[in-house]
Image 1 (cartoon, rainbow, N blue to C red):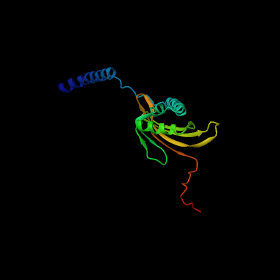
Image 2: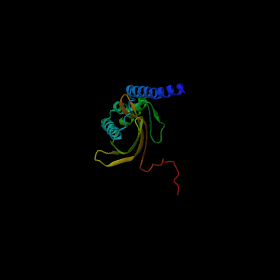
Image 3: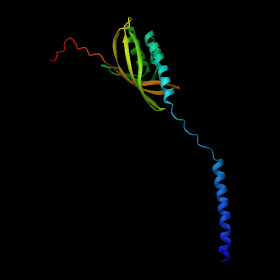
Image 4: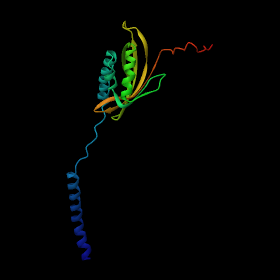
Length: 174
């Protein structure tokens, strides 16, 4: 019986020591940094600021600045043509487009969704002549991602709301 009495007297002491050690270790362990919540409002503001740079560059005929709004491995997927892949090819395409006579360009964000890795932006765009008459308009979906500390366009796909013009030699359906 003496052994059982001695063990029962040690048990509360052991339990107290274990509790103290556990609490001590818990209190002194480095705290895990909690990941900050993604701020969609700030992300939208950043996209709007980048769009303002993009619009200004388009309207000035600055294809280099336009291309710098794209990631290095971006794809620009315009209608009725193969995708331009990579910032250098996008810059070349934009330069040719601008040389052909550029109407006034504008874009507006319709909706934005995503996370801290990628954002998808739905936009409405217009091209207007010098008198403000809309000569083309449409919609776009862009996938943005962070590169060099800035949101940049990674994939850009758009199409017009205007009816497609038929080639002269194509038969008309009835």
